[in-house]
Image 1 (cartoon, rainbow, N blue to C red):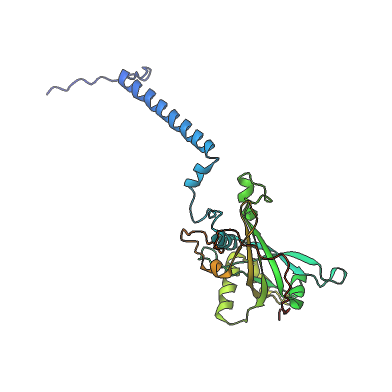
Image 2 (cartoon, rainbow, N blue to C red; image 1 turned 90 degrees about the vertical axis):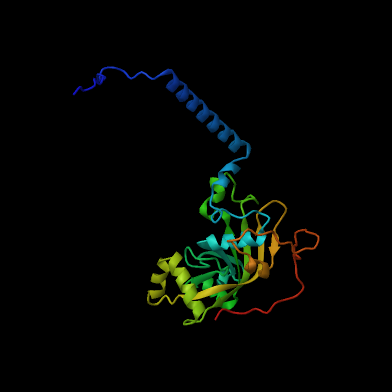
Length: 268
């Protein structure tokens, strides 16, 4: 039996690529450079818009023309709000007062409800203010998670979306289904809230914001006022078309001053 001779390459011998292999290597490098250059140029010309193609639609904010959906997006992604009330402190009684309040419209990872739930305690001046007059306004901004800052947009620019929601604070009765839902939402997003509730003497109670007006500012041209009906009907899971409340398609702006007075209620 004859064993065929097999040539072995010594370790010291360099590997020599054939002419055909060299051509494919050069061609691969050239194509890669061209693709990377084209991608970079396209991204620069589109002001970074190309990156948005690869973002998750569920996490990216909606188009600025979808006002109701933008409001729901900001509410659903918010972990806290700036809450304004009318002060009951003697030295500044009747002055606007503001505070940071943790909120949740659903448990983390759950579908948006659009209803802001939050805990208050009478040890804090916000609850004291709302106990006398439960009218309030909350502000939410797209930059709460640094979205605007990270994209080179100043938080004060109109293109950094913000909403102002005005309404009344309603205390939710313990033991109801809504109480269980709101409590679960708060505990899910704010684990510290469970300690607040369990701490003796603090007497935290659960509230929700009963909405009266929603103002959305997410582009140049002034705020857009979204009806509560349009706001509650907006679905973050579906691509929607902006709703025009004005038959002419113009932004609807309510009168700056009203001649009617509303009855003042208290938070009980």
